[in-house]
Every structure is written in C-alpha cells, then in structure tokens.
Image (cartoon, rainbow, N blue to C red; front, side, top):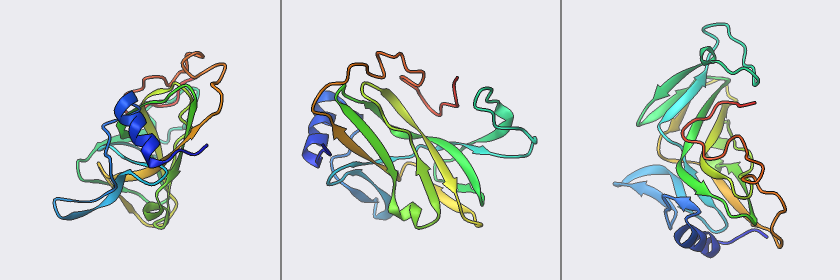
Length: 188
C-alpha cells in the first residue's frame, strides 16, 4: 500500500528512515526560489548533493559495468549547480541517508520540473532493509545544456508498505550497494 505523509513523517522521526528529514515541502530558501524538496502528500522529495560524476569521451574510454574506470568521467564539485552538457549523463548522490524498513519497498521518480526540461532521473528501487545514500542517475536528453541545482530537489520517493515481511531482505543477501556513501560506481 502506498503510504501517506503522516506515515512517512512518523517513520522518519521515530525510526530514522530519512536523515536529514524536512517535514514540509520547501519551495523558497532565504527568499529565493528552489526546486522543491521535503515531505509531500504521498512521498518525499529528495535533494541532490553538490558532487557529480559527468561522463565524458575525452579519453575515448568505454563504460564497462564489469570494469568501471575513472577515465570515463570527470568529477565535479559545485555548491551552486552543475551544467550538464547536451545528450549527456551524470551520477550524483542524495543529501539524505535512508534506512528502509524490512516491510517497505521504495520507488523513485523524477520531478516534473526537471522532466519538463528534458532531464530524466533514475534510481533503482530501495529494497527492504537497504541503508545508505542514494546514487542518482541524471540524463540530459536535450540538445542543450541544462542546469542541475545542488542541494535542491531532484526526485520523489514513494513508499510501499507490504502486508507481509519479505523472506529475504537486501541486508540478508549482503547487497553490494549496502551502506554506500557518496557516488557509488557499478560493482560486480
């Protein structure tokens, strides 16, 4: 069952499911507009950090998920924003850290503000008992550069609570992306 804002708030404050947790939808900071983040009606809008891995072809490298190398991207730290080149891709991570309960599956969808600019955000499901910060995949599908704002909203999480607890959780399987910190490249 899809969970409401009251459930999300209780789980964040009492169970530590989301840290840091913002208990309302934030649209302005210091009288400046921001891409919204925080608690919404049936979800939670996460923020993207200020560190990015932008894929580049400068070294004529091949992106190989079985053998990921540093020559496939450039690391960028920007406290304000990232200019993502046309038809390109970046990895980032969430400001928030998560501790998903054993009976919950969390799905991530992009925010409409970025979707309307040709930006696709992808995050694989947060499985039961997964912990860590999210690695966020950001694609610019347009022929134009796009600005991604650091420390502002990037995507929304939806929390689905199961009627029964799963037999084997992500923690039970010793998942390879458990307790990740920062941007986590592919692991095989």
